[in-house]
Amino acid sequence: MTMNDDDKRLLHWLTLAHTPGLGLIGANRLLRAFFNDIEALFAAELANLEVRGLRPEIARALVKRAALPTARQELSKIRASHHHCLTPDHPFYPTLLREISDPPLILYGLGDLTVLQQPMVAVVGARAATSYGRKIAARLASDLAAGGITIISGGACGIDESAHQGALAATGGKTVAVMGCGLDVVYPPQNKKLFAMIATTGMLLSEYSLGTKPEPFRFPARNRIISGIAVGTVVIEAARRSGSLITAKMALEHGREVFAVPGRTDSNKSEGCHRLIQEGAKLVHRAEDVLQELAISPLATLVSPTKTAGVAAFAGNGATGTDLIKGSTGREGQTATINGDQDCPATTSNPEIAAILAVLDHYPKAIEEIIAHSQLPTHQVNAVLLELELLGLVESEPGPKYRRQ
Image (cartoon, rainbow, N blue to C red; front, side, top):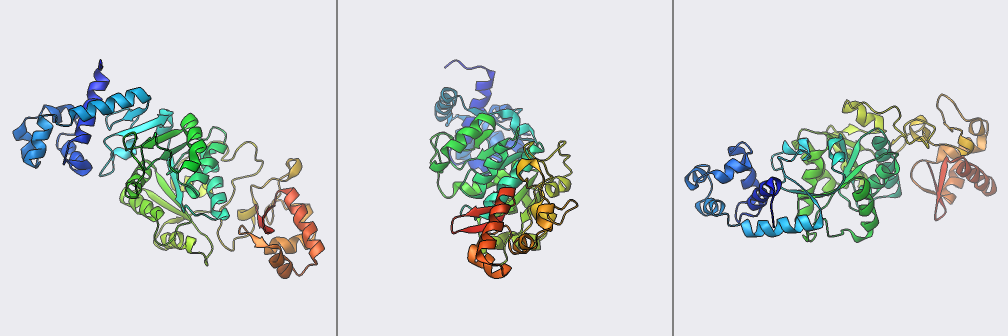
């Protein structure tokens, strides 16, 4: 294989990464001793390497280029697959990621490298997310993406998946998925189409070689990349012990901002977020909260041009007023705002509608519960719910159950 200067440089990095016994922590420590100059490291003599604190057998392995055959095989695979291969001295290697204590030596990529140059916000949360959590994740990601923010998450089911989908739904929206396996391994398999979409308009990233299978220990390591690239991390639905809290902890260790969306007080999926808020995480109602805290100026509008109202809100249990309804759009293009500056006549003038809206929130409620709390006849409740659904203010679910948009 004929090698250009870039290949020769990359071969140094791959040799370092595959040197037996060194490991990521040892490699980063050694790099810092050589001021992150990979060529100077490999030009060093044995005695100089041993002085740096390396065990003799590892120092000898580096001097003899023991991992060079493996590195050459890896380079051939990368070139044959046309994947990007980013090293810390590559111009597209994320700047913030260089600042963490254990940045990846190699980042394999598939997609548009330019998305790595935009400010990124991580959106993470439970895999077994509720419909409420998924909807909040999609809306928040969509509004942030429409404001010029790249959404980064882990490609998992639940909140991660919804965040990626929300970002892709925004006009010009970009998203990055950091995988816990090789980029040629589809995991989870049900997200195959999503990964294909991300690779087309965004970016798939992994620190693992092609062919690496997903294993449990790889995902916490993957999380440090998510939190390390992002300027801030938003947690939506997390149990008291969850991988999302690991990501939040890592974000704090990196000196990044941590945000949390509140949820139901009687749900174990809210415990982690509420704990983060108690410990000082910023409570998020809407995309503006994140942008203002991070001092990021949004574009002219934070929402997709298909919407006619302001930023959608993300209030938790018990919230009312414009925080819940602002952003929903009725048929024929009119904006329906409840308890806001411009109340919708179709709702405020009808006491039956007002009674039912007082019962509903973002969490699905059974029709029997709505009838009981509104104290209205069944036929009236059904008629009002249909009207609200046509206005885009209420969404129905199997059961039947209803919740506010």
